[in-house]
Image (tube, rainbow, N blue to C red; front, side, top):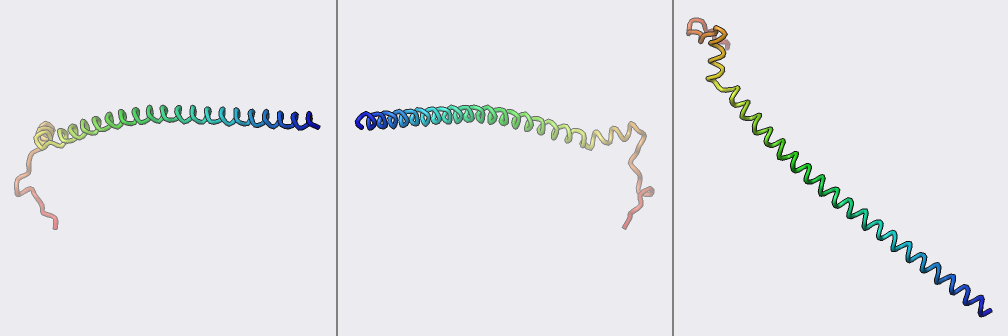
Length: 96
Protein backbone atom coordinates (compact mmCIF):
# COMPACT_ATOMS: atom_id res chain seq x y z
CA UNK A 1 0.00 0.00 0.00
CA UNK A 2 2.85 2.37 0.72
CA UNK A 3 4.29 1.73 -2.71
CA UNK A 4 0.92 2.52 -4.25
CA UNK A 5 0.72 5.85 -2.34
CA UNK A 6 4.28 6.74 -3.33
CA UNK A 7 3.56 5.82 -6.94
CA UNK A 8 0.38 7.95 -7.01
CA UNK A 9 2.20 10.82 -5.37
CA UNK A 10 5.05 10.55 -7.88
CA UNK A 11 2.57 10.48 -10.79
CA UNK A 12 0.81 13.53 -9.34
CA UNK A 13 4.12 15.40 -9.07
CA UNK A 14 5.02 14.46 -12.65
CA UNK A 15 1.63 15.63 -13.90
CA UNK A 16 1.96 18.92 -12.02
CA UNK A 17 5.50 19.37 -13.36
CA UNK A 18 4.40 18.71 -16.94
CA UNK A 19 1.47 21.10 -16.51
CA UNK A 20 3.78 23.82 -15.19
CA UNK A 21 6.17 23.33 -18.12
CA UNK A 22 3.26 23.51 -20.58
CA UNK A 23 1.95 26.70 -18.95
CA UNK A 24 5.44 28.22 -18.97
CA UNK A 25 5.93 27.37 -22.66
CA UNK A 26 2.50 28.83 -23.49
CA UNK A 27 3.44 32.04 -21.68
CA UNK A 28 6.70 32.22 -23.64
CA UNK A 29 4.86 31.76 -26.92
CA UNK A 30 2.31 34.46 -26.03
CA UNK A 31 5.10 36.83 -24.99
CA UNK A 32 7.01 36.20 -28.23
CA UNK A 33 3.84 36.73 -30.27
CA UNK A 34 3.16 40.02 -28.45
CA UNK A 35 6.70 41.25 -29.12
CA UNK A 36 6.45 40.34 -32.81
CA UNK A 37 3.13 42.20 -33.06
CA UNK A 38 4.66 45.19 -31.26
CA UNK A 39 7.55 45.38 -33.73
CA UNK A 40 5.27 44.82 -36.73
CA UNK A 41 2.95 47.59 -35.55
CA UNK A 42 5.94 49.90 -35.14
CA UNK A 43 6.97 49.25 -38.74
CA UNK A 44 3.41 49.89 -39.94
CA UNK A 45 3.29 53.19 -38.04
CA UNK A 46 6.63 54.22 -39.57
CA UNK A 47 5.41 53.35 -43.07
CA UNK A 48 2.10 55.17 -42.54
CA UNK A 49 3.93 58.26 -41.26
CA UNK A 50 6.20 58.28 -44.32
CA UNK A 51 3.19 57.84 -46.63
CA UNK A 52 1.39 60.66 -44.82
CA UNK A 53 4.38 62.97 -45.31
CA UNK A 54 4.62 61.99 -49.00
CA UNK A 55 0.92 62.64 -49.57
CA UNK A 56 1.05 66.00 -47.78
CA UNK A 57 3.98 67.04 -49.97
CA UNK A 58 2.11 65.92 -53.08
CA UNK A 59 -0.98 67.85 -51.93
CA UNK A 60 1.13 70.98 -51.43
CA UNK A 61 2.63 70.66 -54.92
CA UNK A 62 -0.79 70.10 -56.47
CA UNK A 63 -2.19 73.18 -54.73
CA UNK A 64 0.72 75.24 -56.11
CA UNK A 65 0.08 73.82 -59.58
CA UNK A 66 -3.62 74.63 -59.29
CA UNK A 67 -2.85 78.20 -58.24
CA UNK A 68 -0.47 78.57 -61.19
CA UNK A 69 -3.04 77.19 -63.64
CA UNK A 70 -5.82 79.46 -62.27
CA UNK A 71 -3.67 82.56 -62.56
CA UNK A 72 -5.62 85.31 -64.37
CA UNK A 73 -2.50 86.40 -66.26
CA UNK A 74 -2.04 82.89 -67.63
CA UNK A 75 -5.69 82.60 -68.63
CA UNK A 76 -5.61 85.98 -70.42
CA UNK A 77 -2.37 85.02 -72.23
CA UNK A 78 -3.89 81.72 -73.44
CA UNK A 79 -7.10 83.48 -74.50
CA UNK A 80 -5.15 86.02 -76.54
CA UNK A 81 -3.12 83.25 -78.19
CA UNK A 82 -6.38 81.65 -79.29
CA UNK A 83 -7.67 84.91 -80.70
CA UNK A 84 -10.10 85.80 -77.94
CA UNK A 85 -10.56 89.43 -76.90
CA UNK A 86 -12.35 91.15 -74.07
CA UNK A 87 -15.81 92.16 -75.35
CA UNK A 88 -16.79 95.81 -75.31
CA UNK A 89 -19.94 97.00 -73.56
CA UNK A 90 -22.07 96.78 -76.76
CA UNK A 91 -21.32 93.07 -77.10
CA UNK A 92 -22.34 92.21 -73.56
CA UNK A 93 -25.82 90.98 -72.68
CA UNK A 94 -26.99 91.05 -69.09
CA UNK A 95 -29.11 88.05 -68.18
CA UNK A 96 -31.52 88.72 -65.31
